[in-house]
Length: 517
Image (cartoon, rainbow, N blue to C red):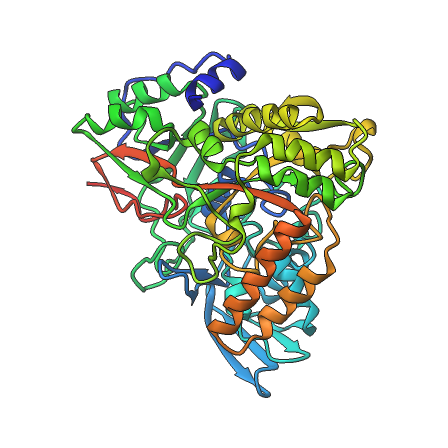
């Protein structure tokens, strides 16, 4: 099953005509899909994270070694045996509207972030008070030491703790935020936005980069291009031709079947961009039948063949994907293969387990995003598999922005809610239990698995790496028992760009530090 073919059957929009004239002062980028969600606190698809990283900045930032570094901060001090952190903003920080960045903006942003992000919720649960001491100083007073505070505030994936103006923080994550005002290296040009066609950013001349060398999201962020244009090109063949002709400079997510073609073009570079590895998951609504029953969720596990899903979304080249993948990022400290053999690709075994679990034939709806090639391909495989197991399946196809809104709906599936959806996790969203959405009871699906929550709390307090790894193994065992979600494999998407560009590093596409050479 080829991803490109699946997309062609779902999206038939006419591709935009692109002028051949090359503007050397404009970086022209083709994202995987349009940015249907602009609010970084509302949802976290890769395009929203990429969009937000241009506009907003964070107090700390994650480097290529996955370590937190000072970013908007000049420094910090830790007192009272680790229970008092004072963070000092760099001087001269300004928002795009000219207003200075103040500590109370940071406080309001972090308080809002701490209500929606799983890592943020943990930090806020051990925080007695978060206050602005003066315009440049904010203070955490903690109930007990929390040495991972910089890691939380450097979080590079959903949801990122961006600092936004205080007035925006009150609306962030509600669906009512209309402004996109940050303090990052680029400004969002709302007046040039054309839905389904173009997103435009202009260099913020008031941004002062840090003096250190860049390291992924940390260090000096230099906006070499006065202007960045995202060109929305749904058709993969058109996007490939545009890149080869020099009509665009960079294609963010290349379908694997087009990788060999682009590699043969001496003008282009093709590489794996996500060095941690993304993951596709199947998430269930645990509030309503049939998936309020863990035995019914668990019954699906024997039928899962991760290779089937990965081939559909990433092609035949096994260098671009991994199967037999568990709960945590492959090759990272918490990764374990404990229990992965429960996924056997045995549909008949799953059918028997479903009957034994008491499934009564309730109709389930699976939400499938048509505008994300990987999600559409994976959703197609998932819907077919659920039907073969014996579920009464209704496929509901929509754009990803609509899916985001629907998945927050807690009403019953028959009243506008949902039963199942597929999601793509950035590698950092499953790096460890701190930020893992799939094991959270607060994320869409709302499974209440108290043992997992308790283990996650213990993980934060574990004295060493060996202790944290042991807890991660326990968590993975419980995921196989209660199946709040099912991992469907890990993949490493390709990106392609003109060899006339320099400064493109591995990781989620940061547009700062990219330049013409």
